[in-house]
Image (spheres, rainbow, N blue to C red):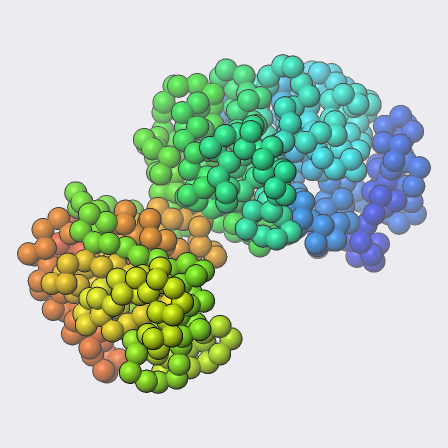
Length: 574
């Protein structure tokens, strides 16, 4: 057990201010320090040092105690999941390749882990600890208790009081920071507040404030943590460095695109860390871009894991869309560069249904009958329809043979009727949130995709060619790299219509005729072994045409698709 585990076990209850204060007083007493001068009054007046006993305690525990003392709903609402001190130390170290720096700021300090890590680094300058805390460190947080915890931790670390104007209560996301100068290093783990979750979405008024401050970077679904990167840019001195922890989705999320663009426009990306293991209490995958405010371009050093271990270098990205690809090798996605000068969207229309279409189809779905067959994402496998032969659930009802009553559907309105008519043509259906790209061809136009299934509509004579193209391992690897972090977890590919349009396409359809025949035979195969063999042949043929002959890509695809072991059935990625 760790020190924090031992302490929590001894306490036997969620730690509140009295426990945090008790730990702080114990630390001061054991070090022969004046607790009344160093511990924040809000903690000192309620301190219960009896809970500590003989357990070992350190200043790094104070922030962890504050996190564990918050109810799960509170932590989620605030996005406050603090950084382990060992991770904070390593990130600060890799952000400062030249050694100690000047002024340091954390715009969302939480429990102070990053400022403590920076303080440790600054001891290498030979400055006294009291000078480091009083002259080199600044921070802010909207949570008054977090501010008191950080001030107390820094004061105990230094053995001298942290000035009240150094770590302050302030909302640096919505309002300009309260400091007039800039900083040589900006660090931290800002709160992750997704606008898609009910308890973390900003109010209409708060969203308006953010739009006024950040302009078009404040997209409707951008996470607040990405906007903190822009806060950090505003705080950063020329040639200064910044490392702020982000959800992995930052690297590819559409609504973070403008933030990525500004970041690469105003800084050089010096490093990129991906936590390839769970680091925080929350089930969120994280990363951290490490940037320098200069235009001295150079290679990007990649880091991975809790130990922030160096994992090679890569050329600097030439566009904001390449950040996710930089991280892909760190999570086991092999590099794949399909040879195509066109995109799929140049040869095919890509359609996606939304809320209105979903509810209209759901209301018109019947068991059996003459209408188009409803296809959900769970009924699509790689060149296989209904691989699991399970009932289909549509709006909390199960169907064995779901069909759309077109007469009922068309009564939903002209817009939905026109949308349905456009779909009842030869096409390829694409599932979402899958380990590899999974498609089925619909050469007769008799399948009705249910949101979030996507429809790719090429010229009718190219349906099987497109199905073969999308079955290429290199296309799946390309998509996995470019959309990394946007799915439920990094083991699935989340595709929207926009991403499908950007997939490498068919430059010249003529070489694809043999792959098209294989794809058709695979989808029509009744026997499992026959389907498996033809699918693998289709995939290999598609990659040959795309100029990819990388065994690592093929093996990665077979493993993700559940095809690596002939004795194991297809693993579903839903």
